[in-house]
Image (cartoon, rainbow, N blue to C red; front, side, top):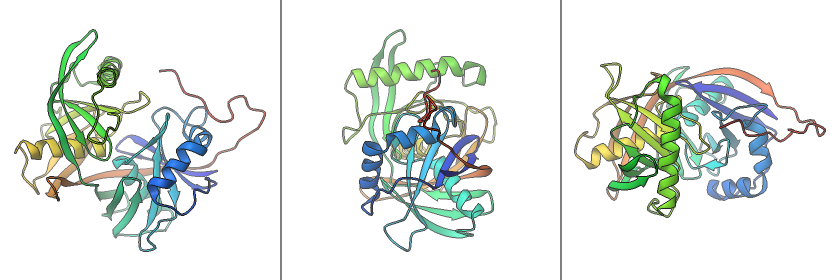
Length: 312
């Protein structure tokens, strides 16, 4: 299997460019279903230890349905498939530039949750127009064992998020273990209480916010992803969900820039335009860098040939 690795504002993406499974020519949602049901071994092989880590997000490059589109893509991580990935889309775009497949200008990528537009601004800088995003419920309270009542908003940005405005710990690198444990407890409590997204989808991302450390940013965040890894980038789908909440509260006007700072200090520049049916259409700008090209090998005698989960 041939892969190209990159990072987007610190968060790794591994694009499978050759050697992935044949998923047919159905919709990207159908191909994602087939990938999840029949080829989970391939997912684990590509991103889990010993070849990857819990932080790596995989992107299976697919032939698009519309020949005018630049690519189709299915995103996945250490535990399963995901709907959309903002940092991964930026990473994929820079990877395709690196491969000579696309150049400056606008391109369409097809994902299982809808088409996204990417605008190549430079060799390493990309702006994406994400899928329509919205807030589903405001001020939802969940009782978290050991923590008490936690209140947050439920919003869609390509994945389902629970957004907590007042972080329960300082958003510093030193507090990442505590933030991870607390965010996982919140995620578990939401599922136990039967609190889900509009379509019954599991809320599999928890996002904490606080004031930024850089005065030129608007907010700092910590995002826990499904599988227990935290996002090193400011999280493209999480930033989209945040914009949807700000727009719903009248706190951010269409076209006005919002700078989201991550737990490691990297940044996304974001804004939105009004969409249909009360949705917004977010635009996220960030940088990605190709860091490796590799061929992943599988030895049938290897006890961990198909990958293994790292320690939580």
